[in-house]
Length: 238
Image (tube, helix red, strand yellow):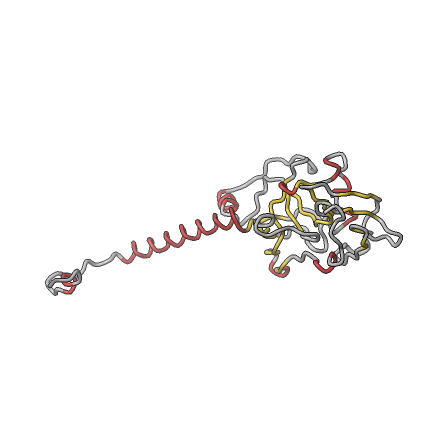
């Protein structure tokens, strides 16, 4: 009985020698292709890089921070009060930006999701009110209240008030009310009442900010400050 291995084992028929250079090139190409596919999958379904251009979220996020946002929230993972979210500027909160200068290397890393897209218009703020919530400012001692319960916000920029303008807003279905942590330097929901009464569509949310990836000395997670909102009751109309 013969076997497939018999021919290779026959001394009269030596094995064909592999070209070591081509073998090395092929392995590198396979690694690059696999890494590219993984990066594209991660960018499309899981995480995406964003850049922080302003101080509206200080001290939580600093100017020039790079972050990764979890694209599965909203989606498989739900959003909640306190989450820091990235959303598309569908209502025109931001002025138009000129076309940025790019190069082949930065274009490639942007394509695979390792660098933020400098041509896209996104904002990043903290969710203060979810659909059905009534957000009000300010109480007698100057704090925000949600559904009648006052909250203490430790993430607010030192020296800032929760808000220098008074408002009472009940968040419609499918919307959120967002504010920057640097309240004195954030043109957030309070400043865009002429556009959807300041509310942001949940459908415009790209994802929840999850990790600061750069600079390395700030590497770490981004907190949703769950304890701040732990005592807020479910809206009366839900």
